[in-house]
Length: 401
Image (cartoon, rainbow, N blue to C red; front, top):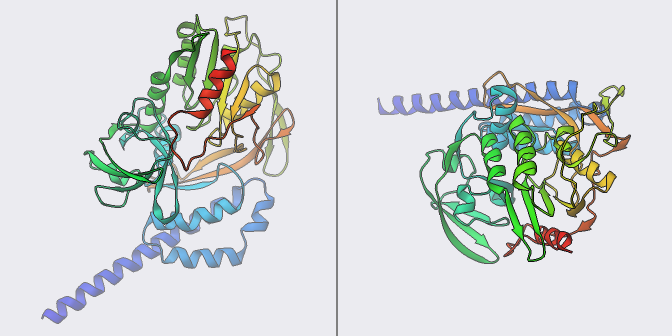
């Protein structure tokens, strides 16, 4: 009888494993079919979506134990396409919840989850390094810094979503400049999309240099009208007496467009024109609609940029550089500038496919893969924690002259 129960258990486990493997193979097939038929530019289909690549990747997908492992198979292939806005996202990724808010719930306050208000780089051996912290959110308040390497959470492997799923306080083991620290942090239960907006509001301040008073605001994203309205309000009210302004575009998300430039320009006469290049090469050009006379900030500006400035916020960077309206300080943007579309958003299966479906040119110039260089290059290495923000310090110095 005991042997019978043992064999039955082995059979059930084996059956469940086969079912899970088939599910992951089916997901892979859906992703492969959708990506190969819609990816832009079309030449990527013939070059990368070959039968050989399909067979090799599907064999791996058949052995994947869940979506997180499948992501580790699909995303390296998608990255090899060397095109932006192309990624397989699962409920283990913070971006998954952001895009759910943007494209599925279509509400800035949904979906909610436990998180500490940080962005991360994934390192070797499954470790995560802090890329940025949101102003006055748990990570920031607990003292986590850009560049911190998170070694564990309560002695277990750290994962940005799973580690805070319970909502309770966790003790993070941090590697910082060769030393090990323990940091206690409790998550918030809030939409990541809404958290970026609140962090933007939290960032607003006046900086006194002894010579001048400068305004500062961190535009984390331009993906909801709340961001645009708060930017316009801060410029008109909080920075009314400021003698200069620092607009921080670093990290976060994109989404911003013409309306985010209006607080800094008299009119739209010099705004860039953009050309949409479809998958088959067909081109259509668009421009900004004119606006009526309005109040705007006409004093000196510095704009902070880095490798985390992407998509719509790169268009702002382009305009500031084109017109020399502001001094760009930092490191080059990545050229993350195709048009992305979310696939499988209504299926509620715990995954999404973000896919480039067209390309965009600004004033006829290619931004994708090239990015935009700063006027003043200031390195801010991610593998070291600095006592101060080197790029912000330089921007303050520039505007204080």
